[in-house]
Image (cartoon, rainbow, N blue to C red; front, side, top):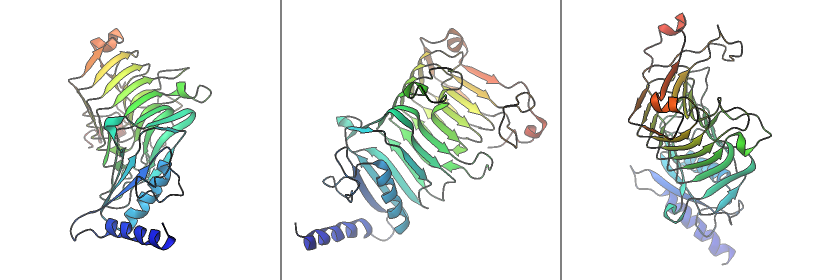
Length: 328
């Protein structure tokens, strides 16, 4: 193809992306493949990118030019080694979606290969109307799979509008990097709200040294109104779901826990500065309220967890927390 013709085709493609009818959200697609190149434009399956990070960067550029918009990052089947993604909130009104290009033929696999710390990190306050979805992928051999990091010191600076579904999270924790510090979560939410975590598989979520601090799903510091529904948890050594510090009105329902070694599968805790000198949050922490554990199954697990799966590890309610007990 001549340079002039290739340029004309590119302009035509971009025009089709941006010339959305009035009143309809513009949509765009970017493609990623194990055989791709980050020097490609990623606009067609024939010219895919090689990393999700590059695709995310381009997706944000698209979102900043045309709001609102839905940008899909279609990830081809195969194995991606040692990739990590760092992101902030999508642009205002933009929905960024990471998904398998053809999930029916097999999930794309992201393998930390003993060198991957966290596969996906989203940080900072969510912009108005922004959304993100991650679905249909396998993430394995990372210390942490997904970390959604709002600001724990500023409750109004939270992450929201997210969906994590049909993911397989395998060999997550310190087992992926035995020489590194303990992991605390496969999926971590810090001041993240109204996130849906559904229909995922958690397989072999383990630390090498100490299991207590590790959780398949860790909701901390004002992480409220999240939904944990229809997931399966298999072979875990810490409490599968941990709720911490004013993380209220979360729902865990229709999940199945198998080979869970800890004495509970759903527990609430907070770091009480009057009793623990290692607490690091300067404003202090509070118990959580209104969380629901309903219609779950616990099988082949710690007898205590099977008999009484939910535990509230709160010895007292600090006076400064009592007035906030009804927070949403």
